[in-house]
Image: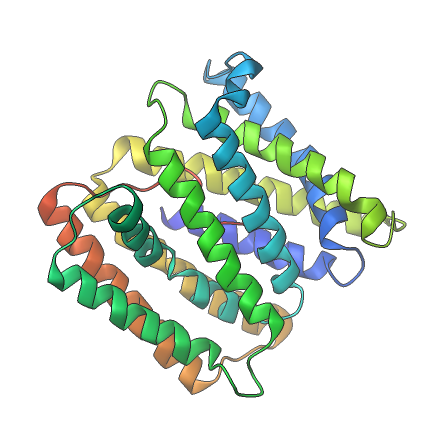
Length: 287
């Protein structure tokens, strides 16, 4: 899980660098081709390839559509705000999934977890601080990404467990890339791609593939109740790379809000572990 989170943050770093030169659609298009190739080779090696008609099943279609919207909104925001801020807001995802599971899937949630969810969203409000100068449309974009990612993860819970996680990731990666190509004419068209930019996007694709590989390994070999809390290591990675690469230092209130969100999420995971229902979807992070 630690390696997976490192892969996702390294991907974010390269995507943020690339966003200075090309649109989110072009990033999705080019990175998606490379990531799909990596995932195809991995799925082939693991004998996880399945007929592509499975991609048209209603739940996988819903999951794919939600992932596309989550990716587009997150990449759009990432180009305009510090990595640590975006990552901090995104840590509300486990709380949002728990909320969605209670509201739409009928999963029981006791008063302790309802309280943790409420406290966690107070932490999110401290991070985004509506009504202040630091609150922008890009903060809203990350929040939208959290909602779409929650839809993705909730639909994943109801999918046939016989469908390999890598195959699901491959289908999503191909779809994200195709949508990127389709959106290109509406986002300023194709921009020239230098060798350095191509290398940057290939590094992003390799990093996100590493994230997918190791998160699947974490799911298959670890006790999820123990492993899941390590997903919050992504905040430490984001703080470190945000400072080293971009010179970003989050405001004290952002750090306070992030601490509240993480504490609430950890408590929610603890309560779910007691109930024996801890799940970590294969592509829980959006990039």
